Image 1 (cartoon, rainbow, N blue to C red):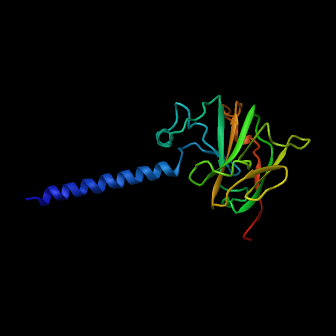
Image 2: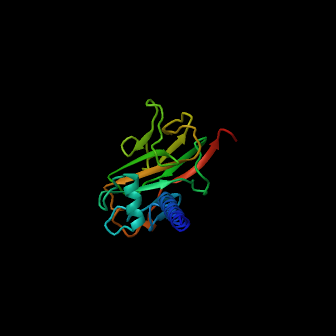
Image 3: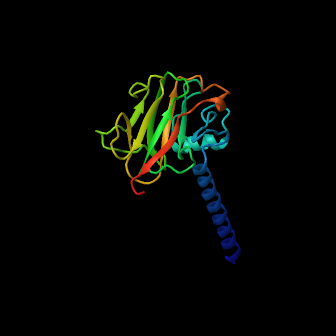
Amino acid sequence: MFRIPLLVALALCVAFGVGIVSTVSALKATVGFGAIALGPWVAFPDAQTANADPYAKAHRARAGKLLYGGAEGLQFTASIDSDGQKLSSGCTYDITGVTPPARFWTLYATTANDQPMKTDPALPGAINAWTVLRRPDSSFIIHVSPVAQPDNWLAVRRMGAFKLVLTLLDTPTAGSSGLIDLAMPKIVKTGCADA
């Protein structure tokens, strides 16, 4: 007598459970479609626009992030270096080159789960267009390392994999369809403490 309702209830629980797990994993896996990769840097220029795909809208709602509008800016993330190796906070990296044209830009590190990396408040946890030391040709070298470095140093904690976030503000890049032709800074591994 209770066999059929019990089987129906079990089937519904399995269906809803599998559906919820697959949806959550899909939202964690991607910000959406339309990613643009420039070397190790990845951006989703349509993620904050009205014509963003449903995955991008759901990801944005789940993360609770307020994204930049098309004319405000564009955020690039990097989880690998220019050789395609995963970024490790036990290693030292040099970010070299120039950024695309922007009125202002910021660079900081996050954990692998996109949470801002907490470092000692006395250490430089972020670098921006006003604080970076430049060469005569306007290029720069930023050392990303858990150990103090001369000149431009972005401090990271030893905690495994991490990501770099480069945000360009008030940039013509955000509304440009020519993103593929942009020159982004390179991320080069210069050494590891455990090697």
